[in-house]
Length: 478
Image 1 (cartoon, rainbow, N blue to C red):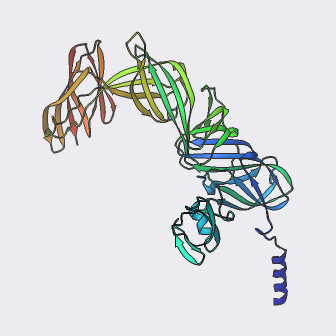
Image 2: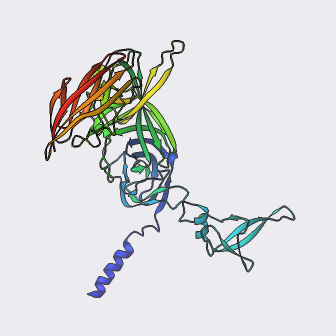
Image 3: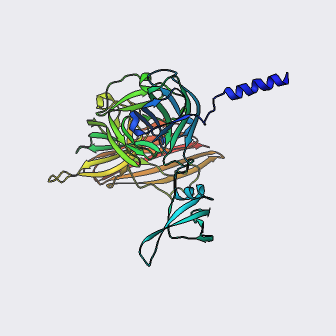
């Protein structure tokens, strides 16, 4: 019985394919590429779909897929046939990244002979010396030359051949079985890090500060370790918590809902809980390159300008620090509605908005920079508010005029806020006060609006070259 089992096992072992010993090696490079799609997320990650025309042999083979990103995420890799389902059977998948360098070459040749080219300073000619590598020591090799041991040899080292375990560039290696021989359209899909994009906007304000033109740019930063030539480019905007890293998904364009064109070069569509922007032409993303593409361009957007005074450190529960800190600056805010009837109405990815305005010099009408701010991902029909700086010709001050402790956790206090307008026109300043605890305005010189449980604001008109004062009293329970 034992002898029968032994012969059965021996037969199975001998009849099994000898993987790795007889597999033919197929090498594919960027030259075989027929198409490439790059989807870049604004979270320092990208999805690469690399399609190549590769001649496979029937049965078992080792496919070396070269010219891939150096920063590939190995666990995200997948491979498939485009022209036929289940045409290949994948047995193993490897990512080879033991790249060649002088130190690794020396490590591979320890105990072996190399040639050294050294210059004879008497004749001026180079001489060839045969040497055995005894040790490397991190790039400081030790040689045996003619029975003697030496180091720091000045000669150039010549290696007879490339060691099998070293490669010149990152490579994906599959051990696979093909159903038939011939050319196949193969796609490798993988995620890579160190590729990202962000948006930047230029907002140009007119003379009356009531209209603006907006241009949006996307900047793609490719430091992934690969160049993607003539790529179909997609950009995904949104706060992606987790990206699927295994298996193959259908092309995202099959899952999109069409929407009205919004970009001159890029089409925007909904994509799950995010937004995807597709460039309507092919482009090349070189490694270690920043590329900028116009994303949106629109004119004559209605604009509002607002002056806001923020009360600073009010100290409603004490009078000890009431006058130590006071805010003297009045903020300048510009706002716009992301609506279609305001010549917008498209999802705007997060980024920096730089604001410009034409100066008053009629001779050249040059644009001048007046401020910048950051916006988060902004859906359509939402309002955008940007602080562009502080008003030069508006001064403010705030002081506590009364303070009384009514009970252990109950206080009453009064405040005076002075606003002085040195501009050439009348203005209105929005005064924002943040009040902690449970509170009630007892009296006020101006009407107020309660924004939320801890914020109240007053709209204070101030004539040119005049001063306006806001006074109010509040009861606070802590």
